[in-house]
Image: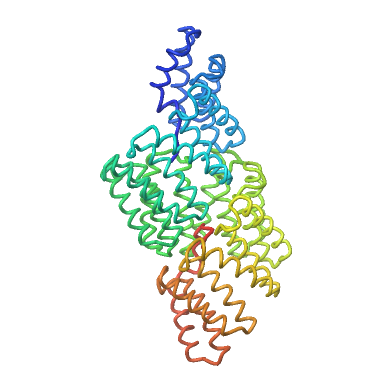
Length: 539
């Protein structure tokens, strides 16, 4: 959740405070600032961001004359910063948030409730730019201020609890995240009631955590409950319903339940196309996700049309260097890579990397993700040295941003393990795989989908080395995890059956090997040829 435009939610209190505190401002000047701020807020709500920016900047010129401890100046600074943050102009937003906090502290002290939204907004900026250690103390301070000011059921406390829970989810601190997100849900339910549309957000946040933890059934139940509440409270065609429909569709796609995902994607897109103009990010997101579904279904031609449409619409609406272009560029590049069109894929990956470095700087987690994409392309082209250099740079960024025990660090370690395996550097590969496995088991639990991947990779390595007695229990454990999470007919299960069958043949058990090979063949025949891309660092 975001604390949008502080002025809009606190205009009455600010006007009342200013009327008593600022006596030197003329009556003619005061309404002028009010009018400009109101117009800016309306432009912001209407997503007319260029007009909102002009108005907030104009109002700020007046607010600067009100004094260094005037709440109007603090509100104005926050709102302009929030506009910049929503437009991914993080470098411009950060100093404005910091100055807004300083003004609030001068005006009302360090514990005033008006300070909490600005602290939260600056924390969200750090969240979006991968600076998680800086976000945590801001979220905790905002929560402490609100807990001291409001009753336990106040939705503002639930919002702060939720933000801290989301931070912990992104850090892989799942147990702490679950406690906080459940608390946020309980508080919202007590404060707003079990049928309130406001309940959909904490339900979806908890569902997203369970999705990251591979607790798919629980996630599905929460998303379904959120949709039911939204449909009754807001109507079946409300844009908020489209958001949760999309989330549930994404869950199904990640599970490989493509038939269940498609009608949800289509309905989400139809709602958004009716509510928003064609170039709106909410519309293009729905088109993009439908393209991912088409790719998973093996319909590459249709997938490419969807991704190109998203790219064209976003480029026209946002410009050629906006970070939101990264998603369709990456999806097109992945599609080309899977089709063996390596030159076209590399050009798109490099463009994405350039965009992200320009927007976020060289050490942002999204830059690391682009480095990984480019490295995997180099790996597909057997340019292992270049791939290792890129993966090592990505690993360094991730370790700095997330810490050495985060699941996304394990993903980078596993990638480096694959490259060393490909170069027959088995000792180094084993060490990397083992470290990745240890991190994943600790952070995600022993039965997570990513743990199964590490077990499979390490099992393959041991099998190639002839360490059959060490490989077999890894295959058996990985198979049990995948069958439990994904079902017995998932392509990931087939891949593991094939590896296990190879071991059985190498150890003189051809009959059992044939059984596994037959089962894998049947799964492959009934599954799409293109693997589903989950977009998760944990799988």
